Image (cartoon, rainbow over all chains, first blue to last red; front, side):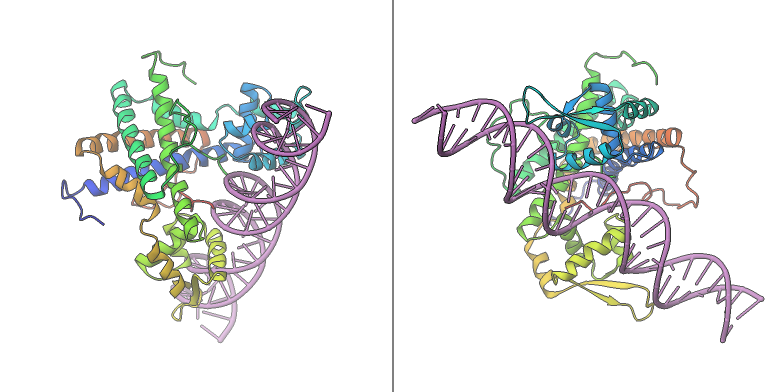
Length: 181
Length: 181
DNA sequence: CAAGTTTGTTTCGTGTACGAAATATCCGCG
DNA sequence: CGCGGATATTTCGTACACGAAACAAACTTG
């Protein structure tokens, strides 16, 4: 595209390495989740669900899918399999008969107790080893990059300007998915 | 593990926001790929394949799966579907009859031409808008974090110390997957 | 209160994604 | 030559993941 802006000769490779690091960090946390999950005969998303339910308590399916940032239809499948394994149970709400609460069974709770760390905690605690100054820098830079990407997204893909303003500007956009198996 | 080191009160929330940014950057590039792909009636991974083949030329299936950091068995499926759509063709190598070369068809090449940007380029060029100083900082910090995560991985999951030393230390570990549909 | 809309969940179809096992070749070695 | 091991690809089984459509219950309004 544009001729490489000749700043430092190895700046280009730093870009690649940062890119690599972002990818690494993201995928590695998923891989670790999966690894931990395997010990309890769970899949990655299943471990995530179990830990969330353990900490927060019963959730409706919609609330759950919002937490793990996946579609309802995806979570339905995950819960189907977990129910089959006796890890969770569905219970229809009495106030609103449309909603279904997902709750841990004894077996599910037992397994949750056996697994100490939650997935994303690993990345989180790695970040916590940074100095305050580093955190500040990282935060500032990442925010800048994220904003850039968002801007390019608008330009290149042409999104409708976000219909109903959601105010907080956080929680919007970060659309992870339940780490797949 | 260790009790939360009480540094600054709002440092914790910065951790969350950086975490959010990492997730955002990664998933947003995938989402954008998918968005672009839809315009040519392709899926995310299919667009990636088309652009790679356009730029690099014919590749064996193994070479291709290494490029998009997915398992051979996954890529086999992707190529199956693309072949069915007439986007690529398989051609057995004459020197080594085990290998299959994947090549773009005229139709595939045509579509590749119609789509300007490659997926990860978006994130890459966002990174390139940083100043040299920011790049240096970011690089240093990300490297530190990545190293931390790797260390925890060894400790918590207990990996065999990387059987056959692969030398480069790069290309190892960053195990992305072809962005799923 | 009934028609129409919204909301919560499931169903269905398609496409990744992985790992283990099956196949087919190739290669080196005796 | 023949055999065992390495390499390249495919097959198979299971689990996500998403979007569109189907459904059912709640809500809105005339």
